[in-house]
Length: 220
Image 1: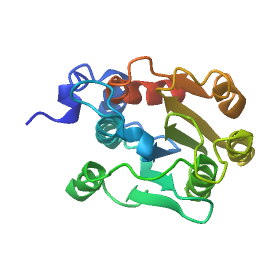
Image 2: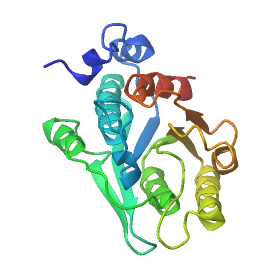
Image 3: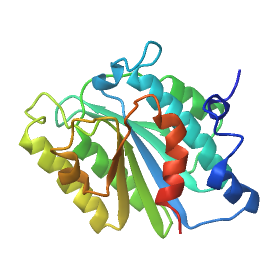
Image 4: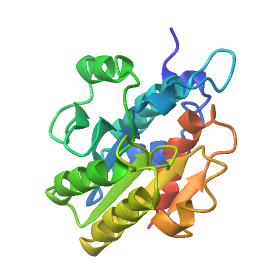
């Protein structure tokens, strides 16, 4: 069976990431990838793919690319059921190798519950801040819309997310959101800033875009 990288046509050109790998260029950089695993990811985006399928493939391809660069990375997912039940899933921590066990954890991720992003972003920020690197990227894959049962989908949720993003930046982290939400123009710039997110116009595309986006965000 072809690897995720081969299926998406990424492995042959390998672009900037493979060049870095061949050069064995080590950088003082750490990246935490945080994936939305809420029920909204159970939505179908094509005849053969749900959003959760796209997220799984994105995680697989991203992890393969990161393993090639040698940059340190961790993979986490989240969902929630009100304020005191935020499910923060460890997929691969920074100290663990990317291996068959990590791939299995990616493939078994399933949608569930709601999207309390502010709490998940704060936990991800605490983990990323502990990493011994001069530059730390917090990469979020989500529809970018806060949602939970306790009015979190109101103005309160938007403000909570905005405060979590501002707190991450004050800590010296670099948060960035990758979303397929083309209807979030009213709140995405407010939460993440005008240069703090990108909207993927075709939801099935993120797996092939993510490694190149990472290269662009960490260039220089």
